[in-house]
Image (cartoon, rainbow, N blue to C red):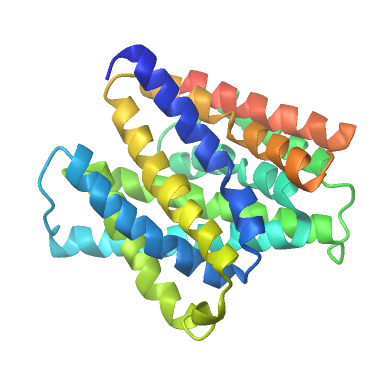
Length: 283
């Protein structure tokens, strides 16, 4: 893969990640059922991609690393569940922007857990995200759908930040696609018992969109991300992934007529700007 191909790959990966909320809304199912269905297809897709692009043959990690990967799976499943709950409550646009708060959580938690010095510019990035979230929601009435959905989405961002930091310690020495495979298998084992009674009753359309989530928004997107990192610098991929909420909002506008207000657009611009700032600092 050359640089040009890697850039196309990472843009496609960001687009696929940005479509997660769209496909979740189209699946029209309970969040726990969407999570389980997504995990089923993600495990199948990642097992295939691990054989096709993995650097090492598939092997079982050690007991400690396996436990950490299982914990990562719990965080991943919780991240998905809270995100799709936010989509159900307040729509794709607010859910996507709320989740985009995860770089702010990553900066704060990284300094706290790894005792790394937080620079003033990083505090400025956190401030931009907080201001953006204030603008995204029209009011702070906990009884309103917009506020409730935004809080679920922010919780989703927190869980994803914790997953990112856990991966920093748990995936060393293991192929990234294989690590994602074990984490998605953990998601499947945890959520399948809750979803099993209703999964057989899911419509064909719901299965189709859950398959799209698992195969394209999880398996393919993650594999493209890993493959592009072998050519591109990490900060380049991070900047491109800042476009994820832009893709999500654009498709929600086109498909579901979720027309963002000027206030929401201003808040989204601040959040995306903060992600760009975080990517520039990740050197």
